[in-house]
Image 1 (cartoon, rainbow, N blue to C red):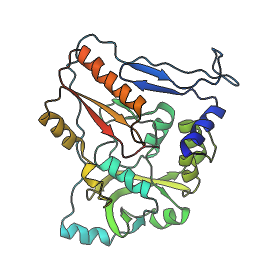
Image 2: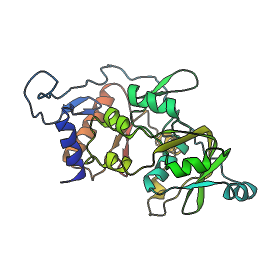
Image 3: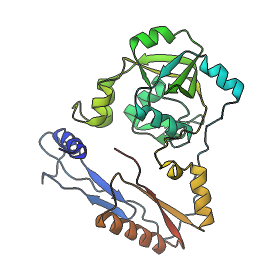
Length: 289
């Protein structure tokens, strides 16, 4: 069974509602139960209405800033001498990319315990001004018990990938990796058939964060796709150069099929009806799970 189908089945067995949202409304997925109640033995599709304004919005989008500070030669020599955690999972490297490039704003480090609890229970994280931002999936870094014992008194810890320093955690703090709680509250299941949960089951017993993190470089994967991995500021620049007065985004793991194309075409038409003159599509086909 394909991974995506396994995930959908796991949610189905847990009686979780499924829905797909577009810019002009929502398209319910297949409803396996016709009952109008939601609970054990019953499921229903949820329709979420979006938009509704008759005129174009004047809201100004926030463009997240990169958190990357390139190392000097002296800093590189210093950081290479630090006690380190060698990352053993490419997805943890990708998490560093996500945070350092500004995509997880206002998160500026791997989540500490308070941020993890908020994400699990509220699907948000709170910035320094008290404003809450959507963050429904925890972004954390795990360590083993032996690593925690060896590093708990250190002031700085380097995070490395194939010996290359990607980030430095300052004033590290360790706390329990609550795999069961994260699984059930984030994904609504404990099934190891869920690929993310299967990964968590292999993680260490503790999580590590810190007072702050220094991101030392813009990560390159050397897979012929780095040219498409743009910073938020770079995407904003392209939109400005093309004269866009609205940008609508779509992320998908697979090649676009006709249903996707119709959805995106309709979204553009709806934006034009609202008064926008040149809405352009930002397509993210490179990732997701």
